[in-house]
Length: 186
Image (tube, rainbow, N blue to C red; front, side, top):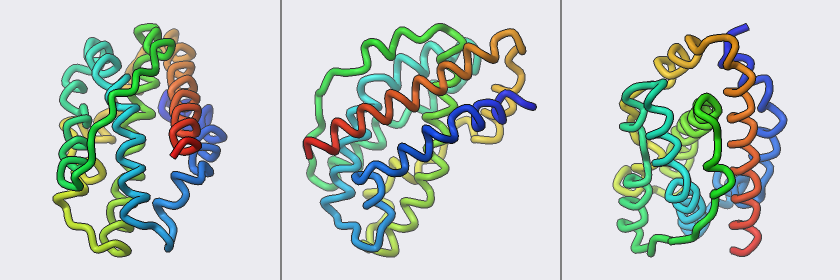
């Protein structure tokens, strides 16, 4: 079994739980509104602002070029287009203590979210009539594609697999706890 298959298997329940957060469920529902999309952007901007750069820069020692997949500026571009203020919430300090190889698992989770982003963008275009000017975050083309990333992850030495998987499960836990908090207070 490849490392990415192990990651997928180890995080399947967490992924399902994340998809059941009401603030995320609504984004792909028939009832989605522009306000729901704005809240979605604010929530993910908080996550990306707090952890993305540190994770990707640390991970670039194992996956050269991954730092070019950072998406915070795309979220902020969408927020500016929708006349939303950016959020300066500080969180994720414990999460940022990931070991070197665990960071690869966190990158796997963050990059995997791009796949769902394409689906969400298509849904928002068809249900809200949004154009690409406000869908940069969901439509952004990565420097390192998903397939290339999986190939690189699968080349990580087997003695580091448990550490990478731990990083993936910790990333899902962080996403779940953070998004639950954000959507509960919305």
